[in-house]
Picture 1 (spheres, one colour):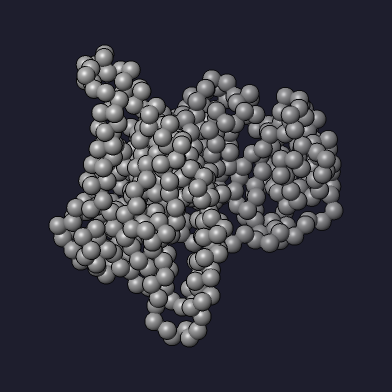
Picture 2 (picture 1 turned 120 degrees about the horizontal axis):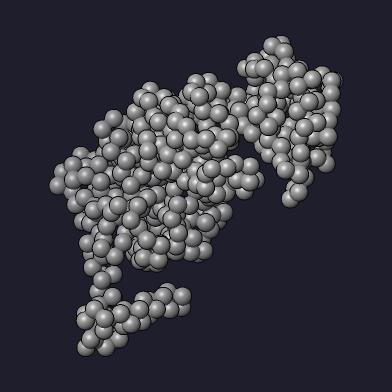
Length: 486
C-alpha cells in the first residue's frame, strides 16, 4: 500500500475514533480493531462484487486498427497506444487469417439472463467476443447494442442465473466516499483497487461536443483493461462504470455514473439502440459565462443558449440566442449537463416546456425534441468572399449576403451580412470570428443592410460589451466583444 493510501486509511480510522464516543459504537475498541474491521469491509466488498464482474476477450480482423477518429483513442496512455499498434503490426498478413483474440476489457453482469454492461470502446471493431465469469465458465457473446455518445454497450451471452450486480443511485454519491474498482487491467483478472470519489459532474473531459459525459472522478487505481468494469461503494453497489484514465499512475480516473449507464443500457436491452432526444442548441452554464452574466438581469442560475442549429428542433421554436433556460418541465437546471440529462430521454416530437429568462422577463417556450441526427454531415469547404464593402472599429468588414454567395459558402441562405475581413489585433479575432461567418444581429438588433450595420456599430460600446449573433456551418451562435479583459 502506498503512503498516500495509508494516510487516507488511518485518517478515516481517526475520524471513526473521534465520533465513536458520540454514537456509542466503538467505546471499547482499540485502533487495531477498527483497522481490522475496515480491512474486513474491503475484503467483503471484493468477495461480494467479483462474481458480478466478467472478463471480456475480443478478437479482431488482422487488418483492424482502432479508429483514430474515436474520441477515446487520444485518452489512451501513449505507451499503451504503442503496445496496441505494435500488436496490430505484428499480426500482419495474410488478411484471410482467422480473427485473433488480441484485446481484453471488463464488464458487469447487468441481468441474470445474460446481459453484460461494458464500454462501447471495449467492443469496438470486435469480430468475436468471449465472456468469462469468475467461476471460469466462458461464453460466446454478441453486441446487443451500443451508444457511441455515452460509450456504453451491452453484450448478450446465452446464460441464465447469473449474479447480477446491485446498482446504486449515483445522484446520491458523495465526494470523499470510498470507491473500489474491480476489473482486468493488463490481463490481470479480478484486480481490486480502492480510493475515493474525487469529484462528480466532470464534463468536457473528451473534446467532442457530441459526447454525453458526466463522469465521476476517482483516485482508485484504474488502468487499461479496467474499462467496462465497476466502480463500487463500500456497500458493494455499483456507482459507476470505469471508462477513462488521464495517464498511467496519475490517480485520475473517470467512471460513467450508474444512473446514466442504466438509463442507456435498459434501452439497449429492450430496443438494441438508444434514441437520444436533441434540441439542437449550444449551451453553457450561466455561472461559467462571466461575460454574459454581466449583461443579463433577473436570473442567477440557468443555462445560456449560445448557439442554435439551423433546421434543428430549437430553430423551429420561439427559443432565441441569449435566452437563459432555468427549468425543463418545471425541473430546475443550472448546468449544461443537467439540461442534457433532462432532455436525453424525452419522447421524440413531444412538447417540452422550457422556463426561460429573456430581457429580464420570465417566459415559457415549448420545444419538440427530435432524434439526435445519426449521420455526420461534412463541413463545407469555405471560400473567401469578394472584396469588402464596409469596415468598422468592431474589427470586422462585411458585405451583404446573397443567395449565390450563401451557396458558394456552403450555407443555407439567411438574411445577414458576410464577414469578409477580420482585424487580427481586434477583439473579433480573439473571439474566433472568421471570414465567411454570417452576421445577423448586433445587440439583438437585426443587421441585414450595411446601413443597419453602421448604425448598430456606432451605438455599440466595447467597454460594456457588444453581442454579435453569427451563423457558421449551419449553427447560429453569439459572441461578446469587449475591450477590457481581452
